[in-house]
Length: 159
Image 1: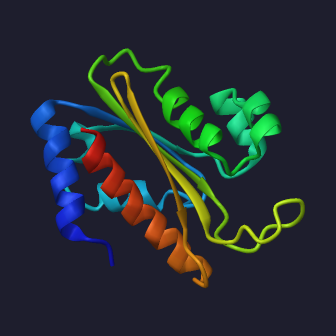
Image 2: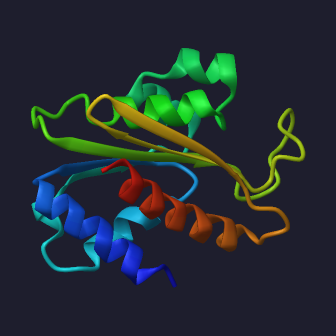
């Protein structure tokens, strides 16, 4: 389903550089992390991952309530903060973080006409990269799968 080449390339980069990975997933519901743990040895590079599907979970686990209230849950700022905040409990110095937020289905107001809008953020050292993707006229599962693919792409680009 996903580009196995892109996934393997990402995993190899993590291992080669001795990186630990931290993931905050919203729209994908854990699918990105699930792809990683399908392969033996994931504990060598994956430290932890959380699914922060609801706004409340983003408030409680990531402390980004003010950011969400100011910018909306599907925004550049929220994705960036999710990626920055997910690894705050880690004492590991060499780490990379990836996060996603978006609308896989037609949202209720006030975000009408935002179906398929996704933000993916990747953070490594002092670098952070956030991309906005718009997956028009796609079914819910297609938006989720395309988001996972974009997470692998951004992970490869940041490290």
